[in-house]
Image (tube, rainbow, N blue to C red; front, side, top):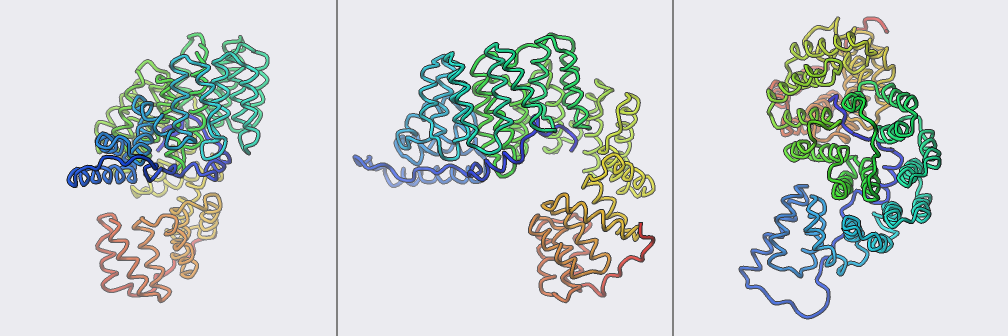
Length: 585
């Protein structure tokens, strides 16, 4: 989908480091009550009810329904308020869903059970910062463990609590503690820039911001926005404009910068940070952005909740929270978060795009399309809403209507003098191919490839289409192989290579690739069906029927059910004939 999924780009290297440190794992919980005086014994019926409530909470936690888990554990802990397991689990769930009043009440108990509980310490650091007790916040931050999965947050906590206490040198020293972690240099110099800007030390802030800009070629939006804001506030509007344009040029297809800058208009720039608490919220958001990946998404959720507890009206953190909730298949919760971003916010456009995607996920397709069409009317120079209409229609297999939507998006872009972007032409090419308009589809896909020569989605789709049609076979196969090289962990692209090998009659190679594809995407019915066909052609008949049965169990498209059932009954009557070569491309 072509909306801005991440409000701040993350560092893959840094994310890998955090994952290696165990940030994707659920923190260990105390399982037994500490030794001491025996607790009063509940009746058998009460104990059974309590155990059932606890199990319901555990189940909700395991299925990532964290609000339900928090509610179940609340009920259980009300019946047994001193049970260590309930205290630990309830505390973590309350923090994860953002119920910080409840988490604050449980934090001392959690620390009593486990003095090194970094999450409990972090809750109390935030509580002290919010109440204006800088000395208490520093003390709590100093007590956070320097090892374990949360060790990366300690330098940020120390820096901004010391800044709240007026200790700029101590804050700088704290951030130097990031040097012992590989991959944190870009985030460190950015935070130092924010620190010195907040302290009014313009020259030192400039040095750190410029070092942050030179630390990598690819800009992320939060870095761009913060440094552009700094330039604007210090009479360097031309540098700010050039920086914004650099981001736009690097991120063709993203409308985040354009929509934010248009919404701001000519209003004078205001400081991004109003307090040291805002600075700590910024660092928590930055870490959450890096962690916003499948393996570490629960930690991203937790840190982003902490950021919003410090700074509730933080639009980028709200957008990130909405993205995390959407990724966890919680579209209604995501919509609730997005609704909190006011219409006058510079991030309202991004929020509304995300909202439309959530509406579509909830099956409210007409409502989603109506919202997007309203947005497209409001902003004729932005094409994201129109592209999203096309995406929704294409996903609904309404290909002709999708083509019309993409036509309008491309026309608008041309009328506005925007440079061609590969993605609308790829999107329209896919819809045209599905609609049976191959000559137009081929032209769009070739144009998309001209605009982005090594885009794996385009290489895969065009290459596979040629192989499937018996055209440009050598070139098509090489394109798919290049797509796999660029995205070796993408099971769908690996499937394309396997199925292309199958279509060319190289069944042994097809099996090899299709087995890899099923390992990468085990629950996809089409990939399992393809592997069944390849097994059959190599004489592995029992395994072929197993894969076809599995494909049926995984819920294939309605028009694929009968062909799979027929193969289960009769097998494949004869080897598939490879397409005749029609030019080498």
